[in-house]
Figure 1 (cartoon, rainbow, N blue to C red):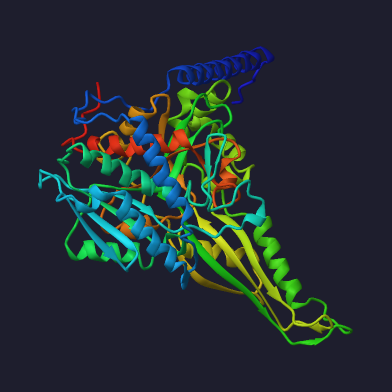
Figure 2 (cartoon, rainbow, N blue to C red; figure 1 turned 180 degrees about the vertical axis):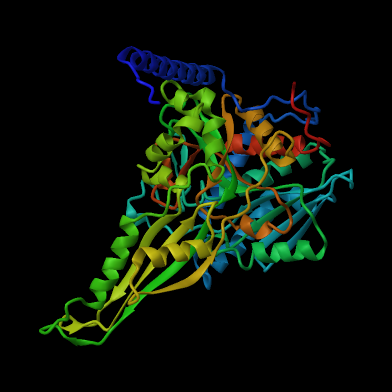
Length: 515
């Protein structure tokens, strides 16, 4: 028996469906709006134990002194050109500078100093409570090359002051942290400070060329002594101000991981010949096609598979509309945000493994068809991928057996350090940022560059990458670029940051989350 559906019944059914659809849209709208105005990930903690016995105040004489010390450090050209070529005389001069301007650090009975590989340094600062697990502060002495002919406003090793900034190679990578750490410790020791919690300071002399003699040997020495660290803090991300579109106020990005890296060699071999009788496709043409495929078909967008999602969620309440609606509802808008991020080179690096063709070699003579062509491609690997996964994607993307794919060197992304409300290192860094920079919001993020802190993974599961330097629009181009500089006030803040951080670490435990 067949049931006849009348127009009236069909109309009622459509009205019910439309009503359900409208109600669903209304509920979705209310959820989105509700989360937009109430969403906040940052967790407040109970009252902190006060371990600040010496308050971070600088006298006019100290301001003058710390600036002079910093300028001297910048004027010494501790350049690393390659793993086998460094300015050794400058490194020796820098060692003498440290001993001269930080006499308390080198003479205090609380501090043990050891030279590592001649030019790196390990300081062990003994605390009064041996049961508290120590932590470690890192920085590096060496800098990348710089040439005044590239267009510097001041000679790159002059430390010249211009409009409240000190110009010079190393002002933001990484002598501001190195001198800031030691200057803070010097002032604390001058005022009779004794830490409760022991800590280490590691200063590598070859970070810019992978840290194989500095950081690696410091780690090996600490491992031989059975040292385990509560956390490690190295350079990395900074305080971003005016960089993120729609964000109200500055944000301190704490690197809880850093991307991996792979250098891949692509090569094509063929028979040489005369240019008057060229083959259908030359070795250069084959290789160029492979390179074009890699650039055209980027690695997959992996937004949400690493810490980058937490970066925006924890900043959601600081965004204005309509950005705030997106950040507070990434369960719905993550694809929209990831699409926006991949549109610019500096933010695209957060969401995927990046592909950079950096070297292309071929040809010997204008009228000779080249028998060989090679290209080198640098990949910065997203937290959700491995070196081997990237190699497989390269081969499938090129899909040409004439092109040989060879891994020259590489390493996987670093483990993601904890950043929840119970994590000692992250919460200490966050509190110190808020102590010194109360207007700044703190959020975890991914470090797209590499540091020599990656060698310390066997000593601690929690490695953080943050320098309390201010980055404003245009400043990212100064990193390893022309007109590297730092504000004089910002350098003073860096000294105060480490001054406060060392004392904040004297708490026994992080307070519980506030209910």
